[in-house]
Image (cartoon, rainbow, N blue to C red; front, side, top):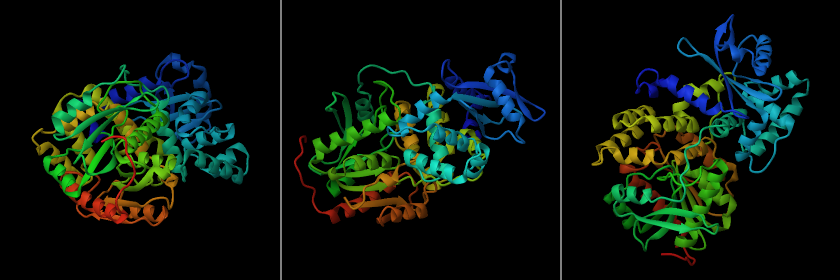
Length: 503
């Protein structure tokens, strides 16, 4: 975080933290925030009225029985998250009622409900307890807590305590009382203007779905080429004339369904589940209008979550599914007590959903192109291959303005794309229904190649094809190798057949 906010004037980190607390500290059943100083090793609210708050008495009583502050407190009817301060920042305790917590988590539970015991266990795990510690604290058997954890894992679609707590914390921060961008009525044509400016040769479409909603598409490559539904995250890469030439050479037509909020500020905001539904509806329209009975899907980066979900819902409508730069399952964390602090602040620049909140903060406050450039450089510096792509972006004739403008106009989509990248539901991928392959950069240090190979084996022994010099960003000089590998994969499947309704 300090690397990122070091690009801004002094006090930017404080402004960001206070903004996030402020957006989560609304009246009613949102977050309640206590900024504290430390006295005798324990936090004490800076404001006298806060010390008289009924909730503070419960928090203080719980803290008195601890030998360290910890990551949080599982109160009877609330969850208290703790971010320890330092010489410059106060300790912050953020409290959320159980009812608001349940409401926020429904978006990733797919209609299932947690029992009261499961909710209590989830709060304990978020606060850093293990199953054995949680069992001892409540006087129940370890096997009881293990059974409850298995039920929670199934409902959340995860396989470890680290994944469960990470996914829950991200969802709580995104949905519980968080400030949502202002909604604008109707639709807008911003994506057409941006495509005209930065994507020469692109065709723009807007189609109406069965529900009456409007869906937007960008169409690249020869109109008579083999249609591929390109499930791409956030914003489009910089397609240059030579990239379009590669599409023509391979006879491929990329149809890109745009996410809600991508290159648009129109329409209401969506939660994670609604955003997923919208993405699948866009893929379905692309299939029926451009592809036919079955569609070839190329899911790039966090688009893996949307491609996998569409395949889960409609396996009979998928001709093939290729993952490019796929996010592997998040690795298990180390210290359980440090998980919250790491997820909230110190690792925010490398945590998808929290990074999106940082980006939202920057999007509202940062208008200087050079500041945005430093942000990208700091974010991608750990991977030289990806940093080289960012440098190529800024060496292009538009000088980085393409990326800045598309990001500024796509904040709602970016927030959700990073959210879905933190925990794709790989186990939902249907088995033995259609060909699957992975195409991955050998130098991707965010989702290293060994993790991708292990994932492909676990999902059924799918082939993994390597782009030797690439990281996670697979465009500019990596786009032609990506297309070469992908066309070879498609050629092995034979021609695509089936009627389509569009052109």
